[in-house]
Length: 222
Image 1 (cartoon, rainbow, N blue to C red):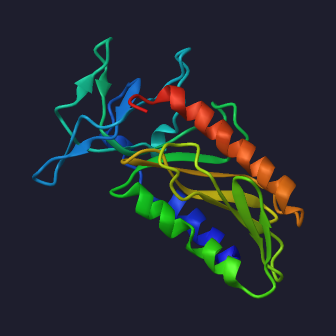
Image 2: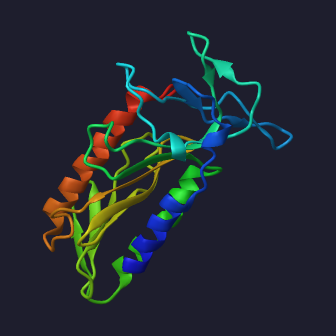
Image 3: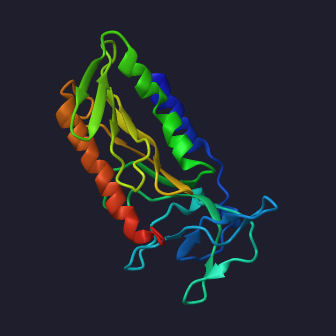
């Protein structure tokens, strides 16, 4: 499990920065659409890069803009860059997170399903304690101080959703938002690694819902 979380953390943090391809100022980002020629053009899911009060929300150095010239403009004439991923600034959002990333994916459902593989394996391991709730299933391995839980997704389609927690942090590797985007998040585990799986699952579930409640108003077309 430690290896799983370490690998997921590396994927979150190791993606290259393309902030140099971003305009000097923008209020929204566009996750683009793939054309028949395989190129990415404007016209994907649009997400706010600033709050409704005008406060910047993103870590600009980690915003991965594509060099698309024909971009849309917002109502004030500002460009809407086409991006592949954005990271929200933990200090600018009222959430108990250390990482919150939205990323374009060729197949969000399949990516979310792959992220549950380690959890499914743990459910089959000898000595694992399984805890079921009305909308979650948790696995607590006998040889590991932590747990993994699968939840009902807060988004339509109920795609696979799993969170892995150890004594230090919780990791949500892939929550499919729609047919284009996934959410990745990380936060301090608190009591979520406790052997009391049901209360831990409820705590994790509250964090997942907080993430959805924060992002939904910032996105168009959901």
